[in-house]
Image (cartoon, rainbow, N blue to C red; front, side, top):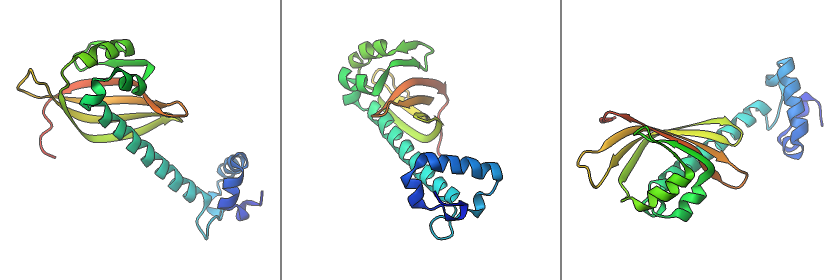
Length: 179
């Protein structure tokens, strides 16, 4: 591995362990701004861009999964629900009732699916392979003329192959209004 001034993107790609050691040393000596990479961009800048792309990819994947979970075809399918929910899944519903995965697999496919709209998604990575997605939901049930409103929070875990929901909570709130 070259000295600090010669650290380039091809070195990053070649040996991530050495990169980590270099970055640890760089942080220790507080000289990240002196490291050159592609042209004059510091390695730190490249890592920030990579992390941003990685975060945006996670956020988009989780939004898509949340949107799949509100679809009638998913809610009526034990097989699909089983694949999206982790075995240790736990939910605190907007009603305050608590459910495990087995409860959801038994209950959800027997219900008439409501019309759910989601908005204002926000994602944050909690740890490697663990992320939280929050959003606001409007739920219109066939048996009720008035929609219900809630703030929703889901925790998703990546098992190396796919994301699965491990926790979900809905908190009742008032109408959102126009934004």
